[in-house]
Length: 564
Image (cartoon, rainbow, N blue to C red):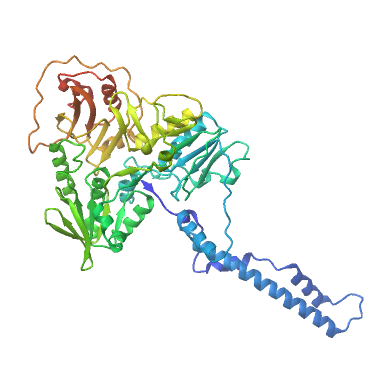
């Protein structure tokens, strides 16, 4: 089970019906001057001939002064107390907005002093920053690493935002609970302490955007990720349409959509890809309980239409519909407006669709502004120029097997940034890894893929009837772990090929489990493993070998698809 939340998760709460300030008052001590005046009033002045009226006047004035002091102390402490209470549950970004508002009102705001020089500055967030920082620290335990991120959150994993978090009432399939954050807040030290701390550390500077680099003798990583794309029809629409549209990517987007799904009657998801289909299934499974309509709309002919061959894309679309989603293929959005309190979407073919809220999941554009200003180009070990590395969603690199590539998946982010971190500490390793990606639509459909997976390429699919164990839930329960993404295959003998004619898929078949090969000149460019698990190293090696295959039915036997 994945969870995310504000800083209030571990905050103490008052017990019983006692007001929270009661305990605060009990902890206060009586000031010393009050104790002294009490002693004087009870025992009198020793050995003096002071008029009683003068003594009473002195005691009275002291009491008034002490009372004023106590009142001011109580008032100030109560103010600080309520300020702390009001901050519990706020995200880091909300706290920063509150601080900025205070500054605008003239209240002094403490500013974090940023070091003028850091050996390992990492420009990025999420998986990017954490993978590189962990890699640097593994090779240089005393390293001083500064992560600078526009995101106000701690580094976190993005995949659960469209999957596990929507089913957070249940534990993980393997019975474990996990946080989407890579590390707790205590893992990072203050940025202003980074330069003089004895054993080094990792500091996190959130809510900040780097606009210019001045790299001297340090090692810098640019891993600024990407920004979700929008639709031109939405961009042309008015402010009300934009306020009722989410370009889903961050934790804040998940929190907002979760809240909105409990308030509206209809949600439309635009996009047929990984994110759009996963969100559609997640919301569709809750549609009946929430009493909402979930619509998925896209211009392709079926779900995952850019990835899967048409027959499998259509089959997947029917599975998504069974999850409670109204799927509308072949739909191109022409305009979006407001009519009768609803969002009115007009399609190119004349159809009109109404909804309360739109989630746009139409792709990602890399954040390359910082790299573009310097004219950077990455090489085989993710170095862009002297002392600068670029990795993850930001990097477009040359794959010696598949040509020029840009990959935006989680596995590539982890491996490329880990490699960049190693090279920043002197490893000088090239990037040979064939990154993979995975997608599950509910607990019974899962596929993993590696290489160039493009539905425009010729494909050959070999399928077998699925058993009760051929689904992601069963595979995870049996292994007790998440699927392996980075292990390397040992030497695998490819069977000698004998010519054979692949059979075309039959309409209406149940594609329980199988292998889909993506070809170019009879050489396998990409592989999709459909409900087959723990075989990704084999798929990676087939692509790495780059051999021509006349009979892919024989190659498919390597994946044991006919075993029960």
